Length: 222
Image 1 (spheres, rainbow, N blue to C red):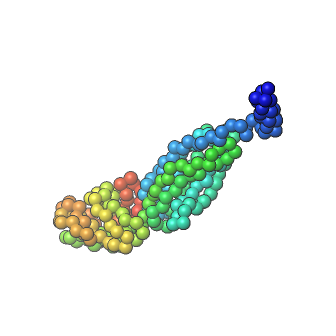
Image 2 (image 1 turned 90 degrees about the vertical axis):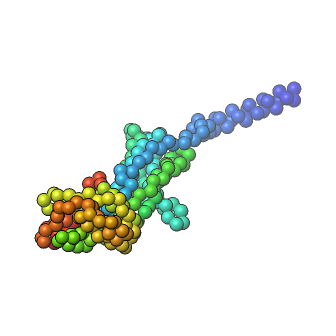
Image 3 (image 1 turned 30 degrees about the vertical axis):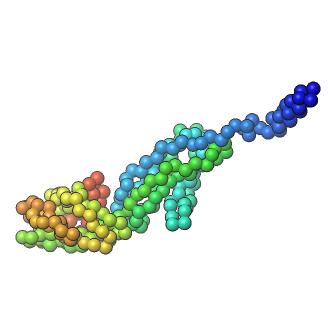
């Protein structure tokens, strides 16, 4: 009898709790699932850089864009997905200053386990055309004026007529300059030789520098 009495009391207590607490309180929190990408891993200063993706569940989920700092994660901005959302989201990342930065997105909301997405690291760089030197040994002086290393591989130097030089792989550290010679030669830390024998630069022209993917890096009219 004593055992039956204990079972009865336990059932009574459980029934009272069920009556007081809403059904949602008995359900386990859902862990959001992310799929995120960035449109570029490296862009020139002022270029367009976006982090976008999907989260499941989507409707009503609050998403906070965060940036990693020396002291941890810093919240940048938050948006809440509408009730009819498919879970898609997009954040524009700041590119007004150069450097390497790491971002993620934090999902939270009622019935959800607060969950971070995987992080993504991007680079914002800046390079400039400092001068153009026509002549038999013509070259263009390019300087890395940002705070991250740039690799010239596949970058293109063009004149006003559209004639283009495609640059070889060559890393330029922050603050350093490199001479890009049109003709042949032996590449060193501060000199890059494209290897063509035709002349490109006239005494008055416009030089432009673009990345492999066609993003404009610099332009100089001389």
